[in-house]
Image (cartoon, rainbow, N blue to C red):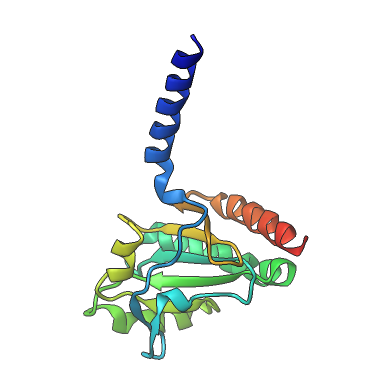
Length: 172
């Protein structure tokens, strides 16, 4: 009986590992070259926030839920930064033909996020992002701790709750 229970638990753990395997607490950011909004190439594995939590959000100018999410976060981003020192990297997946629209789009929105351009979708593919918006939360060590796809009004509060939990745990 004990062996049967052990086998059941092992099967359940394997199943859960398969389902949630990409949410490994030790998952590191892959090394992909992307441009910042000034057109300078950076390596994505250099994305950091001085030991504080950071967010990588994949979005596109043509994606209405993406824009809604980043607009909602923008309204509270100053507060988030003051309370947790979080940094948000907004990674545009607009292709090379439409990336010239990203800078004026951001300027019109007055977003203060660190903007990165993933014109060939290399970074997007490396992280397994199918459709935007897609949000990843990393701790100060650069380990993935949360991810979320899609956007519904209020999702930003769930994200902030997780950011605050991280910020508090990293102070201890």
